[in-house]
Structure formats: structure tokens, C-alpha cells
Image (cartoon, rainbow, N blue to C red; front, side, top):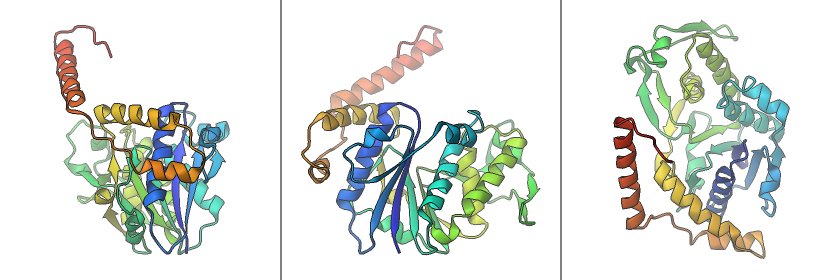
Length: 290
């Protein structure tokens, strides 16, 4: 058995690459398990991981175009990219694969996430809204009453327990990676129903998983800085960290353990004032300067 940690990056925004690199460092530096860990990154710009002792695969222009449906829905890249990596690795049934967003990091042993993954359980970040409780007229309300004969002859039908799940993390055992194809089939069917919710990829994945397994929440085992204020501050910290020269990957791992994203009080207060002034200017119809 082997554990695989996976990241998928596209676009040229350095913030995503800085975040992914720190997430990897925080994961590896705190990982304690008898099971071997391998880190795989699928990236449009693999050279940004120079000096990292990990496996990096090139995300090609053809893959980006095909997986994003010619640029119409880029979130699909996550599903297809994860499926591509699983095939590339030739996962055994007992192997485990964990995808993480780039704005994640760890302050305690992350191997506990892999412990949640098995033949009967897959992991996503946290549960969200029930689809049948979404407001009338919303994108998800277009799926009310939806049913479909699947490619394997089974029937999928939206039900009162159908709900969204956050995809900040996705954990699957090798025996269940075919779930990604089922999720993609559902996602494309939802889009044919003219549902354009930007979270449709993760909803389709959650629905595909619960057809055969139970979904387990992994929120308590990961930290993240996904809100705009926290992200801006975190990236400023990471720019300083990665501007420092390190003699080895091991030295970088050790140094990463000292990084903290606790914002100074003055930064928090300034952020609150900015948000309030931005909201007020919008109400008054004034120009908003970001």
C-alpha cells in the first residue's frame, strides 16, 4: 500500500504555486506513518517546482482544452486531472490518493486523513447545502426532479439527501477511482440540463461517491486561508519565505514549520474597514478601487 498526495495547477498566477509549495512542505514535514508517501504535482508550469523533491508532471495545452471543454468550465480540470494521475500511477486497489487545494496547510500530522480513506469511505472537505433546499430560480433548482440512465444501465435520481460537498480535499482508495468517471458523466448531464453552478463538479463527485460509499468529512484535519483577507496576508508571508535561499529541500522543510499566518491586529482591522468602505461605495454607486 502507498499514499499519494496530489496537486493540480493551471494558469500563471504565482499565488497558487506559492500556496501549493507551502502546502507540500507543511504536509511532508509533519507526515508520520509507516506507509510510504509520494507527492505528485500536475502543473502547467512544472519548472516552478524546481528544487522540490517530488514528482512533477506537465499539464499540456491539449489537456487543458479538452478537460475544460474548450475553456467553458475550467473546474472540470480537477476531476480529469485527478483521473489522469491515477492512471499514470497505475494505482493498486489498496493505494490511496489525496487531492488538496493550494491554499491548504497543516499544523499536525496529516496522515490521519489517509486513515479515513478505505474501500467503504471516501473523503471530501465538508458537507454543504441540500440541493432541493436551494432557492427557486437558482442554478441548482434546474436539477430538481432530475434523473438519468447511466452508462452502466443504472438509474441516477436527485433525492432529498442530495447535497453539495466542498472539494478543498478529495480522498479516494484505488479501488474506487472509477468514481471519477461516474462523476464526470453526471457533471456533463447536469450541464446539459443548463445548470451552470460553478460548484457543479464537486456536487457531481459527491453524488457519484454516495451511490456506492459513504462520504467522510475531513475539515478538522486541515487548515486553509481561502478567504480574501487571509489569503492576501498568507501570500505576502510566502513570498518572503520563498525569496530566502535554502541549501536543500530538507532545510526548506525544517524552516517551513516556523511559518504562521496569524494576521496582526492592525491588518485585520484595516481589512474590515476596507470591506465596509467597499460595500458603502457600491451602495452609493461610486467607483470601487481594488
